[in-house]
Amino acid sequence: MSKLERITVTMPAEMAAKLRAAVERGDYATTSEVVREALRDWSDEQERADRDNAAVRAMLDSARAGGRIPAGEVFAQVREHVAKVAGEELARRSA
Image (cartoon, rainbow, N blue to C red; front, side, top):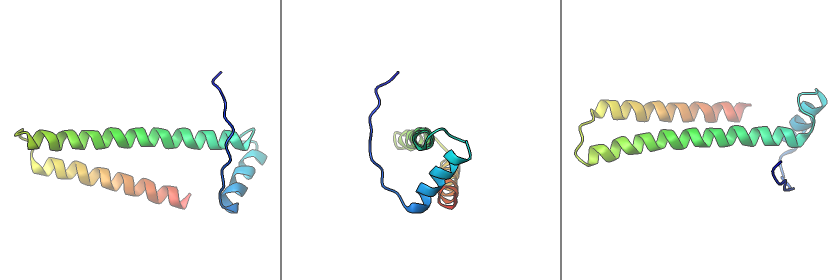
């Protein structure tokens, strides 16, 4: 088992109430489990975003180096990425 470290997190009362409610419903054994799952999800999303950003950067770098990539394809991928990130942000804020 990995080494555990205790940290203190300050959050709005509404978030703390949601954590406690998830435990009281039996969805999780402890509030720490809720936070760990949220951090895993956040970390996974950061990795996905990093991969998406790297792919767009690679396309742009290739275009700068003289490669032929249709501008429409680049802009379509950028628009898709921005829409995805914006949609995820809206979903996160409304959760």
